[in-house]
Length: 163
Image (tube, rainbow, N blue to C red):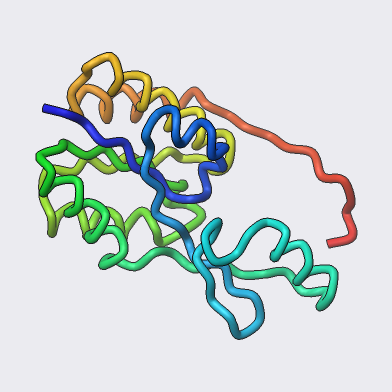
């Protein structure tokens, strides 16, 4: 059976990698003042930088809801795919719990808590996508990625500490 790899928008993979590995993305929501927009679709990084520069306020995020995840999972299950969804750390967002609830509702979905975000999560997503391309099952991918999450660390450097 074919395996579809899905992640949330916090994995920060480039559009080129998303296309190369045919990864589906469920966006988180970015809240800019009183406007809630889908990360990477309705709100770009440039929009976020502009908001911060103009208001001096940091944006907030909110997790995709259960229905957001269920719709994406169901789309691929209806096409006879097994699904592996890799999610931002449950320590940072309720997104993981919502994905698990949607997986229970839809069935045939493995949910992996990457225990990371940004490039740390992205590395695990890429590994899953490579395994899927090599013909691994959803269960094999999920098990290996769950093991891998304990060995992935990411760090970053900021240009300014103004915020």
